[in-house]
Length: 327
Ligand code: ATP
Ligand code: LTN
Image 1 (cartoon, helix red, strand yellow):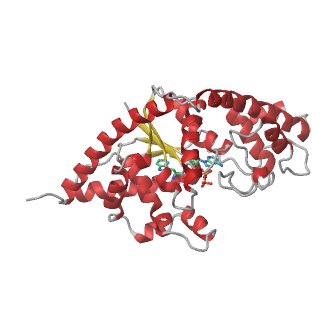
Image 2 (tube, helix red, strand yellow):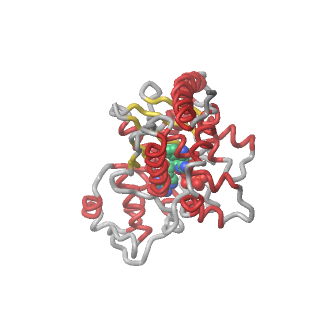
Image 3 (tube, helix red, strand yellow):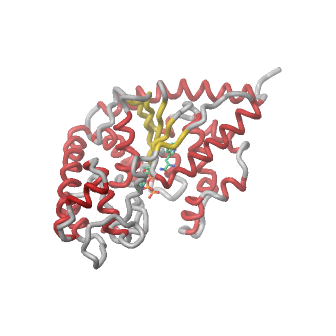
């Protein structure tokens, strides 16, 4: 059975973008693949985190995974920092990754610009991500397009390591949602909808009050043309709403254009809000049911037990091949 793996950072309540770009993909394929889903808490500290907030966000993200339809019986779910082998493997891979390669990562370029003083962890972040993926020989990595370059780097590192030390890793492939969707900020639709965005109005979070969600969608930036037509260059706001509607309802872009051909933007936005709220209400109900249950700890105990074994084996294999042994 092919393996699939992904992780999300506990950097705040996840957005509709995270849900559509990563989680929905995991749910869609959970019956087909052996699935690993983790909380990338080690990645989150590449930018400053408040410790109390961080622990809360970790728990909340776990509950949201389940609330979004991730079945704990079909997925191995764990916390990255509980598995010490990820950081160990990452170091061995770091010494097989070039400075030039990491310098070309566009996320690093963007995120480092936003801070006066950024850490070296922000720079080596993609290597830890490669370790997460390669430790489990994942075949597929469901991510939003913004992470594609990192998965490609993981491929390059795996190919290089295999060539140098012999066959060790499966070469992973990014799994991008069918429409290649990147959900954009509702206020500035040229910018990715991001968990850590400063402008709350542009970001829909899965735990937002539904009335707030409706207000955000009704207030989304559009254009003056008044035609519901997909044209990301000239009509980024409307195209973003079409993408959201399409991802939630599974309707094609052209069917959506026909359905709303005689609607004005207000009517279209109301319908987008209806389908988004319907989906998010189900998620919130499930979340409230499980957030304080013991099941969450049981899921994590099971996950760490399984994944520690697998990652340990990979680490030992790498060490052996690299010459770390007594002779
Ligand atoms: P941060 O703002 O902290 O960088 P983020 O919102 O970009 O967070 P991540 O935790 O980095 O979220 O990403 C989790 C997953 O969600 C990744 O697979 C990423 O590609 C996907 N993702 C994030 N934002 C979007 C978006 N706007 N559209 C589609 N997919 C997205
Ligand atoms: N870098 C990713 C989170 C992440 C991840 C991974 C995704 C860490 N390790 C391994 C897929 C596979 C992000 O910021 N979204």
